[in-house]
Amino acid sequence: MKEAKKQYYNTEILNCLIDGDIVSTQQIADAVGMSEKSIRNKIFDINEYQKFTLSEKNAAETFINDL
Image 1 (cartoon, rainbow, N blue to C red):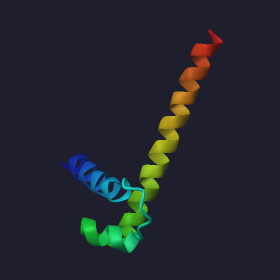
Image 2: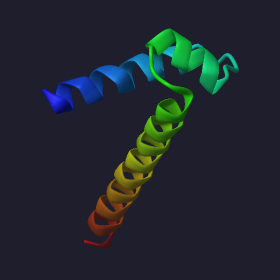
Image 3: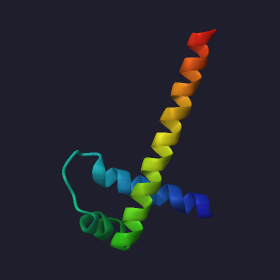
């Protein structure tokens, strides 16, 4: 259940950002129904996940290219 809830909020946050418009964390918080601090923390987590995923992908590509 916890993972499903996390995915739900991450999806809602990303939906607010997907249009490319500049939005404040308060606007996202109002749309998602969370506090502004929670939104900042979740956006930080999303960014960290993306960094990890991209670095993992780059490492795999480097390994394959070295073969």
